Length: 231
Image 1 (cartoon, rainbow, N blue to C red):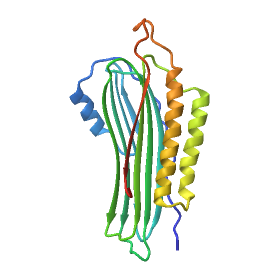
Image 2 (spheres, rainbow, N blue to C red):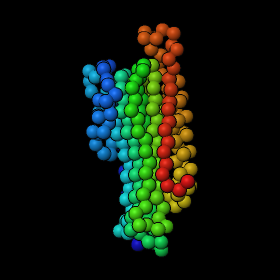
Image 3 (cartoon, one colour):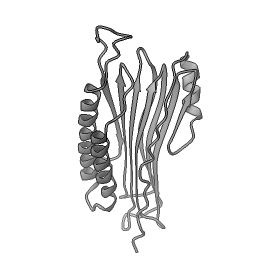
Image 4 (tube, one colour):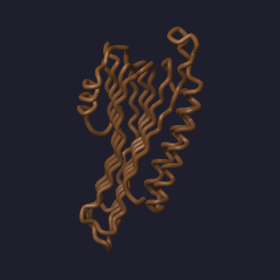
């Protein structure tokens, strides 16, 4: 008997950070202290923001087919320091070769921030584990997008609607009968679409002429990708 697949839809966090002073050691400690699942912390007067997102699945004989995704957007404003942690963990345990498990976890994290010389401590990790589970299909994928602009900006309605469509397509993978390799390719394709949307949004962000009259500090979108599972 096939049990229903469980999943978590997006948790969208939004907060603002103020300018302040940051040490790398302080930022690291804050990042480690962030709780599981999804959260955003800002520290007014210190210019520090910490964001944490996680998708976790555990498939076993009682629940052999598990899927979970996270799609989180954090708009932080102006900061001096950022701790960003994004993780996907998929575990398959105790199933047999004749009745294998299928465990898939995908986490998309989008962070927008503004400032010059921002200190960033970013972790993006996918981890797939088979525990005495021959023939099991286990896949964990983490995608992290960090958007940096000279002046604070917010994603407009068009960008948010486009991202919502991608999130819906990510959720739809829950009911897909596609192979693990195909799921991985579809997730990569969705990530490429996210990157295109964020590139366009960052390019249209306002320039901070008061801080940088020549406007030489341009926007950037950095994407981190980490998969664990079938190569």
